[in-house]
Image (cartoon, rainbow, N blue to C red; front, side, top):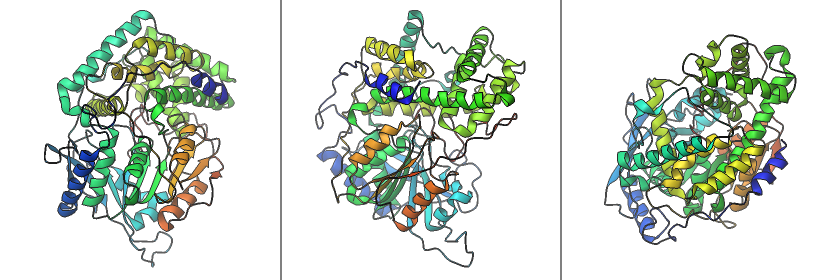
Length: 551
């Protein structure tokens, strides 16, 4: 299915008006921009500036075995910015000081430019590992000039963690993943969604309503002050681009430099129900890209010489797994989740293709190693899911009638079956969310209000469809978009594309942006090897670019 057809199919969905939410500034609209929250943020910022952050050894739960020089600390923020003297929570923070060593000239000392704060996305992902990225060659010039600052946003890790279910029972396998679910299966998922939504409040309390994107943006300003920075240098990926844009709209004069990598669509009409429909359509296109690549390498993988033949091979595997789980743990749900990861990162293509080929030719081992869930990471997965759900459900109105979900996803699944229903099930608790929601902030800045922002995007990104980057650039006056053409890896900065990295380094190190939107040729395609490639599991990426869940 061509991208244009998918986009038009998604755009043609007859979406009904979602449930009404309280108007901005009215009671029952927690976190909506208002005078009380502005005053509370100012109070929290002043306190954080005075207190600073006492960096010391990192706790194993925050950052196990960090290299020398990496330290951790905490910053205190209000749970509710309208009540800065009320309950407060602590966010964990990690830091690697600027090396001030020029990787191109060991005799030259690089001037320190301050702190670079990073968020990897999610919602629900921790950035605590970020300071370690300075060891990678592509990041050494950035690490020379900046203190690399990672942190766990509210709800994540040990930052006042959220939970919606018992972690011991959160990871279940094998599971189903029907492309065209029956009415009985839909009823089962509705029951599960309602129970999960109730569990979020039962396990985390009514304070869960303060875990939202607006408060994530306010927390960012408190962190800026605690770091002693008069203006913020920030890099956000995926979901991190959304609350980065909120920050830019709420605190434009506080922005020094901002990189938004793989930008999501900030249009209030797309937060978050419609955004997920857009995402499901885009994943279908990326899945087609992956099938085409496998077909071109049929001599290696023996899965079919055409995209349609590869699809039949995948369907055969799914049907076999529905009858008998591989290793007793890998069913259709685990297969789909593992191949979804390849929709995020094309360097996962070889390992997935090799595992599918091995399974269909009698060896389930590689697929089991990739796809079987691990109980060791169950607590982290459950926490990430809880934060994802709370933030997305709190951020905006959602349809409260399943008939709307059923109609929209049934129509979309006709042309985009790969991810549509699994994406719907992940978000369905928002239909039954038991606390009040917000109205999304209309992100906009006028000419001269904001320092130039650098937006990076891959043209075929599925997790953050390219239309979002275009919309982001329209809404942030003076921003500049750099596009990696005909590429789909989610997160492009600091990767193998030297053209993209040139714009990124020029901006962060010298403050230079292109005079107009720019583009770069795509990175090389993955090399087809029978032994696979990077074997990241599920949708959890490696430590430097993990963002969890869907965005």
